[in-house]
Image (cartoon, rainbow, N blue to C red; front, side):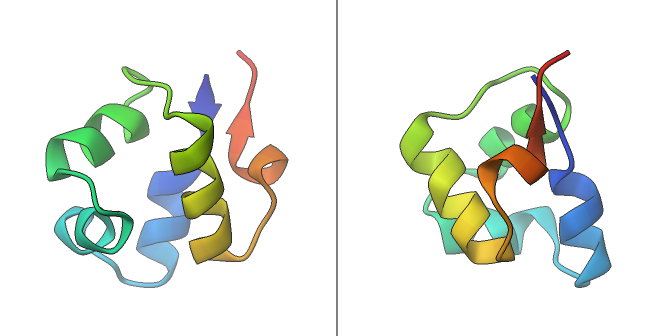
Length: 63
């Protein structure tokens, strides 16, 4: 699944490490999601959505 997490994160000047800490995951998880190597659980997708203040559908896109 494609996503806009990298763009959203960079727009607010956040490092991968910072986002990982906020979400309660490892930096490796953030890297994998940003590189479309890992699809987050629904719970994690909702945390990401809530943090950035946009809907899950605005962040994640079917390929």
